[in-house]
Amino acid sequence: MFDKESYLASINEACSYISSRFDMTGTDTCIVLGSGLGPFTDLVKCVNKISYADIPGFPTTTVIGHSGELILADIEGKKVILLSGRFHYYEGNDMSVCTFYVRVLSKLGIKNLILTNAAGGMLDGMEPSDLMVVTDHISLFCESPLRGPNLDEFGARFIDQSFVYDKDRIALLKATAEKLGIKLHEGVYCYTKGPQYETPAEIRLIKNLGGGAVGMSTVPEAIVASHCGMKVTAVSCITNLAAGISKTALNHEEVLANAAKASTNSCKLVYEFIKQL
Ligand code: HPA
Image (cartoon, rainbow, N blue to C red):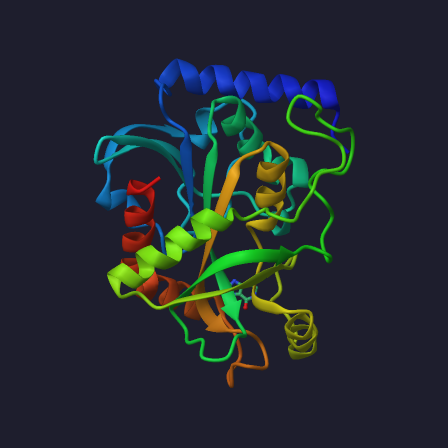
């Protein structure tokens, strides 16, 4: 359990450091670059970047392929924050650590959070390297990132979760995909703690609960972002068919290879989407 006073002090310290390095004026959008979105940094003009290790209180990431940088980027005149690397519960982080960056960004004025991730797919017609817009999530199997003392300066104790993923943004993302000729599924993302992939029995359960994709990130951040009053949009890259639906055993190399295969489409989709915000 985190200590409220020292947690808030760490948030303030991280904010002061970032504002001393970046001019955040007019910057209200952040994109978290999940697996497959790495090349997104090549599409944008990098104005400035900070290594996570330099930000006081910021955790560091242990996942290979996530570089651990906060980037201030310019997308055709629009300044956005890119996060290359996020913090997972399966790495041993407490939920307060996994979601620390969301609260820091909220304090810095970020209102739109775009979360991208790799996920196992279970909807009919899904194929590896397809994309899915997240319409809702299932977080029943994880500890809430809002557990513990409520941070009243961010949001209320008991918050509604009926519209975590902004409906207008979902519609905009779907329209953008259609315009670009990119196949886009829509469905419910089910969060699992990992790091082991699910068993076929777990996937049958999740599918019966209405899950469309399953993954080990995004939901803690989306919950905290909704607590902070942000508009959240999430896109999953279906890197594999979920356990038991796939005829073969799952492995991380397959996940990375299919994320890379999907990256042209996922980067293009997110880029065009942001331009319209
Ligand atoms: N399950 C959980 N997380 C994942 C998967 C999966 O099948 N694929 C990519 N991340």
